Figure 1: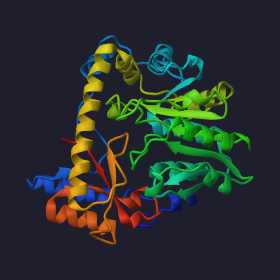
Figure 2: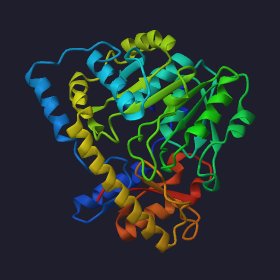
Figure 3: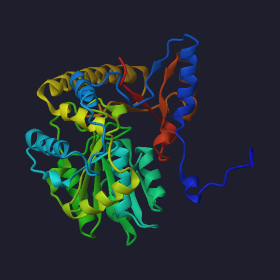
Figure 4: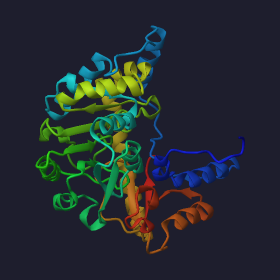
Length: 374
């Protein structure tokens, strides 16, 4: 009957909204009234997709390349991704292990779908990207959030993982660089975590979607650790500037690819065809040159914003080494970061994201600034 409360699946009780959406809605209403709002709440670069990528997408439409691709992705794109790992990182990855997906979110759905049984656990850091725990919940699993402190660079320690691992734990999920903190895990840290989960035959899932956006140190990949017990997720959204194209990929252990293929056929059939053809241009030298220039711009923004916030009294545990976020302690100004974010919008027309969107561990003390805009 119209007006009746909908009867929702039980899993929806564990799916929380983004609290920043309230702030974003208010910020857009202020924009509509002609106010000059500084948008630092959304993790989307203000650059449009690189011109070679756009032109490749247009050509694919003009050539009528609009049909379904194989569920695992265009063979040419899978090979291009494999070639990128070799040329950029010196890592040999067989193209047969690469699965092209509708964004990194599609990649995580596939991985969790083939790994997680109802009631099984996935360990992850708090703070962290909120959709990860919600996707675990979607497949009937339990996301176990482990609080990480600013003093430990917001990084999970291997002994922390070992203490919380039990017989029902299936996987550990980490991100490097991480959202919302911008922190990197070194290869040595990743090796410790990798070894910690391999011993009980667990899986390590590494989110590398901000991989190209690294500052002050070389870019690395977890694929240098090995090929077993490891899933790596990446995306064309962040470094490659293709957010709206909705395209990502998985590098999976060979034995899991048939199951990923089967699940992809049933969930979304294939990633967007035009986006896949456009992404072939993402690895061209001209495109990579543009992306490197943009990376340098993000680094300049990070340096400026970090100094400015620290001078204003925000506490930040050193400059983050990647992504385009600063996770700042606001306890010098407020005991409620959500209220602080609302006041900042009302009184200074600056929109930021409260810590509660990224978990519950000390969330009331932190806010995230995104330096995605000039």
